[in-house]
Structure formats: structure tokens, C-alpha cells
Length: 271
Image (cartoon, rainbow, N blue to C red):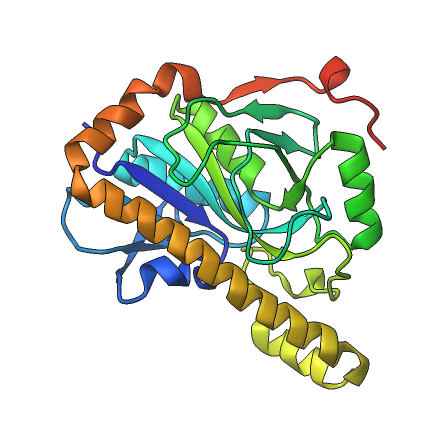
């Protein structure tokens, strides 16, 4: 019997802070690594668990494996920030994709009939190994027909598929298609943690970066607020009828388990 209905895998705690403020912080070990879990209450029948695993696909994969092993969820969700590839997506929009593509190997996860509130699944999210600038965003949009880009979802989808668990993704747009991200990749360590103090020192010495850094900080707050509101609604609905929530998720397993296909004919021209 699953211990929780939904396991959320986020990169950073600030992405889900709108949901998890005042939640209990629990550190648990899995395969020699410690993971930070967040839950509303410390009891076995809590409906939602959040793990903040770090930035990038490897960190996301490790976190997904940990939460699956330790909490046996009925569904796994990749939740956090994404960059817009489509000009119609704006900061603070919540994007719930129907398809997740791994830019590394071209594999795709088709999401159907998932247990998501707040609208139907639409569009494509591509997972890219690095932080995408404006030119790279344009390339990804053309190569994959995607509307948004992140760094974790395809890895979480692969872990869910390996365990036969339904998968979903919920992303809040934190940077628009024409926003040039500061070069932050060098400040992500091997564990997927962002070295905030080092980046702050780097930016402080480069005044020409200040406007972009300030804008990114404001965008991140707006995205976190929007995502928090969306997740709060989901959590409230789970709390109203916890038995039905778990039953409904289990009922969609056959149709919503991730379906991976090779790159080849379905991806179109990849650059």
C-alpha cells in the first residue's frame, strides 16, 4: 500500500516554497546520500511528500529513486521552474505538458490521463542538460516543437517509468523566450546545489549583470508564487478526499504510465 499519493521532485526548495512554508523538514538517507524531504505532518498517511534533489538530471534522478524507495508514492511529479520557448508563455504562467522530451537522447514521455488539477495537459517540455540562453531556446523550440525547457523532468519521468509509476510535470515559467539568462551553470556543484554566495560575489563585481540578476530574482519570486498557489489547490483537494485521491491516481496507472519512444521518426529535425 503506498504511503503517499503524490511525490513531488523539485530542484530547489525556493521553487516549492509557496506550498511548503512551515512544513516539517525530514532528512533521510538512501544509497549513501542524504535527501531533504518536506511534508505537512510527520505521519504515514500524509498525502503529499516533497523532495528537493538539486539542479540537473542526475540530481533529479537520484531524488526520484530515493522518494520512490522510501515513500512508495502512487504518482511522481517533476515540479519547479522552466524557461519559455514559446513567446506566448510569460513569467508566472503554469505549464502542464502532455509530452516531455530528453534532449540528450531524444526519448519522449507521453503523459495521458494524469491526475493533475488546474487544466488539461498541453504542449511539450524539453529537458536540456544546461541553462539555455536565447539562441539555444530558439534551437530547442525548432528541433523539438517544444514550448518550454527545464533541466530535470525527463530524468524523473525515466525513474517513474522504471518503477511502473504514473508521472506528471508541473512547471512555472521563470524566464521568457527573449530573456538572456546570466551564466550560472558554473555555480552548480556536482550534487546539483547552487552556490548562491559564490554567484553573488561574482555578480557584485560585474555591474552590467545587475539589471538581469535583479530581473531574474523578481521573475523567480513571481514563478514561485504562481506555482505555490497551484500546488496549494492540489494539496487541498487531496486533503478533502484522501481515499478518493489515491483511488483515482491508481485507476489511471494503465493510461498514465510514461511511454518512452526512441528519437528517430517522431522528433523531426534535430539540430
